[in-house]
Amino acid sequence: MTRPERAPAPKRAKGARASASAEAKAAIAPPQLDLFPVRPVVDVLDPRTVVGAQTGVEHLVRVRLRPNDAPHLIFHDRHGWYCESHGPACHAVQLARDEVK
Ligand SMILES: [Zn+2]
Image 1 (tube, rainbow, N blue to C red):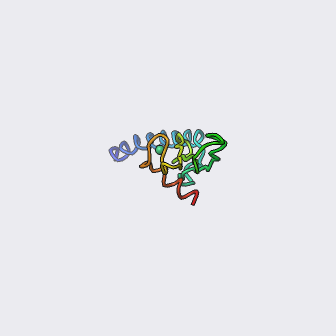
Image 2: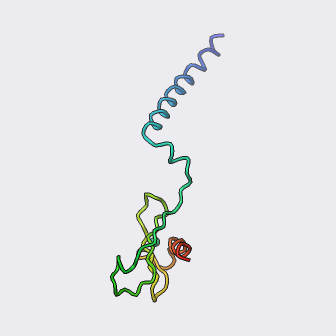
Image 3: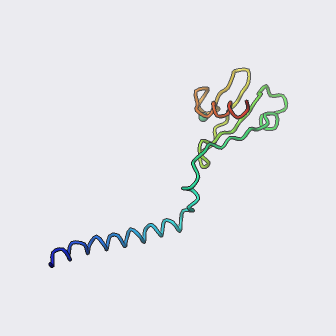
C-alpha cells in the first residue's frame, strides 16, 4: 500500500504551484481582456485637418487591426484606396472602405 500513496504526492505539489501561478497571472492581467473578442479599431479622420486644406484626399481612415497594434493609415484619393505602409493590398484597406460606405 505504500506505492499508491507515494505516486500522487508529487502531482499534488505541482498542482499547488500551478494554482499559485494562475492567481499571480490573474492579478497582473485584467480578466476583461479574455471576455471580449479582438476587433479592429477604425477611426475616420478629416483629410483637410490631417493632410491640409488643399488636399485631394477624399477619405483618410486610421485602422488598428488590434487595439494595441500600430495603426494603418488608409488614403482614398485619385490613386484609389491604399495603405500608407503596405499599399492597396493591405487588409486594413477593406476595413476602411467598409467604414466610410
Ligand atoms: Zn497596412
